[in-house]
Image 1 (cartoon, rainbow, N blue to C red):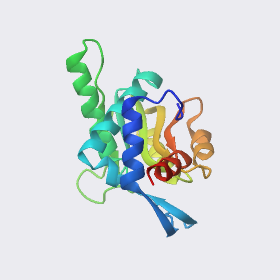
Image 2 (cartoon, helix red, strand yellow; image 1 turned 180 degrees about the vertical axis):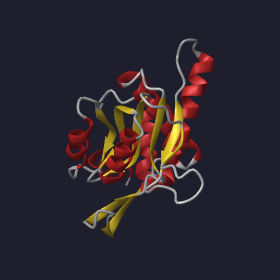
Image 3 (cartoon, rainbow, N blue to C red; image 1 turned 90 degrees about the horizontal axis):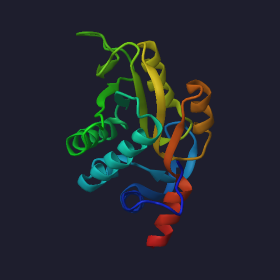
Length: 202
């Protein structure tokens, strides 16, 4: 579900925080190697106390709407880390407040297999056949999200949906959709939404 005129209070507050805390204009080189006149570091928002609370609530609602059968939420460390923790916690609070609303567990995907200990690439919830939601904070080309998706699939789990906090509108959506089949890709905001809010704030 993209940003619309029917933006909820939580989403409006989250957008305002991302624009205030995470959006910067300048000359930047992205992880993909591309140049950009702006940078969005969502971790400054998702690790903020209020930003973390809001992002967890918004993602929990999206899971309830688009993948109610999912039993876990996870993504590639470290951009997804605060989103995973805050979302899992938000669903647990919902479960306490509303009987019959299931909570989801969390998992984190390493960029590569551990070379010691258990040697696992996924930490946390791992169950073969489980339906899970993959999350990321910023999607540019989709590379980090796809790494997480491939690790999930290799572990025998099924991707029920992919959620992204900010889509930079640079091809990530198409690349991700190409590997998840019929599962939905949902971005909360686009980079255009964040830029517009930043300009509105002055």
